[in-house]
Image (tube, rainbow, N blue to C red; front, side, top):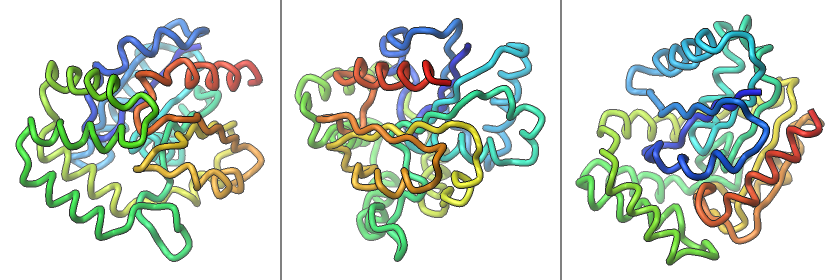
Amino acid sequence: MKLLVLNGWSAPRDAWQDALPLISGFTDICVLDLQLADGETSMFDAIDDYLHRIGNTPLLLIGWSLGGAVATRYLMSARSAALRARFKALCLLQSSPCFLQKEDWANGMPIDTFEAFAEFVSAADEQDFARQFSHMMLSGDASYRSDLRSLRRVFARNKGVSKVEQVAGLEALRTWDTRAYLKQLSMPVLHILGSEDSLVSAAAARELSGLGTQHNVRVIDGMAHVPFLSHVEQVAGAIEEFISKL
């Protein structure tokens, strides 16, 4: 089985290089960065291209953060119908189907908080953005200090995402709601949440479990919004247990 990972918003793909080999049972692992500046088309094309390159090997699809919403929308798009059977399961890693609070979704980010962050993103230079976003992702994490140093080193050795891509991703976070899509999915779905995640609340666990019998939820104790550093072994273990039952 091969593993396809859709990366999160504005995060360096390089961050995954040490983490993914710890997830056993895969013959090949590919990480795709988000491409949303031209809408979903470019991103969906990149997924299709990868599937055509690897032949008929079965896959597990993982979407981290916003990448999880992209994964869900891809699987439910008409254009992917012929390829959907290639994916044996979906893992949504710290990914909210509805990022902002709504009357029927209390566990999203308050709109005022989100808009203030969007203003910061539009004004910040690359260094300031990396510093603040690293803190936001790791706030509350049981290994905050050591992981913050590691994450900032990752940002420092990678070129930042363009403003155009950042703004496109923010618009997706502002407007997308994939709950209806998730209810329609028939494949097994694993949701992995972090107990200390300030961006995608673990309080949504009950609502995610209620999306259907195909949905399974695991909460990793002490983990904020970074799954590939100190908590990677727990994340890998949850994924391995999930795929062992497919």
